[in-house]
Length: 100
Image (cartoon, rainbow, N blue to C red):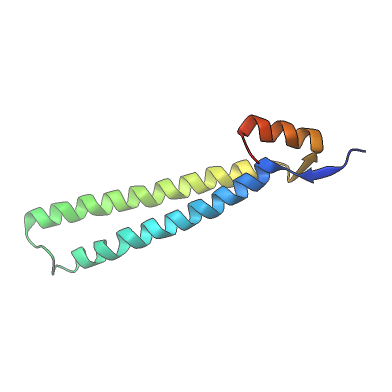
């Protein structure tokens, strides 16, 4: 039986998920606070402000949904990727995806 080693693609997917989670959190924080401040009515008021607030809320929701979909796709890919492979498979995967 061939000796199994960590699958470099599995490791890369895990690293990518961690990076994306951090980026999503930063994006939600960076958008969340300004949206709340804007919504307070202390920044801008009137019909144009209400229209802008609605558009901003839609964009914020799209960013949130997109982040969720990206994470779901990454988790799905990770679930279908074996955590260990043979050394030869690891070399092939590393070469194919330009991984260390």
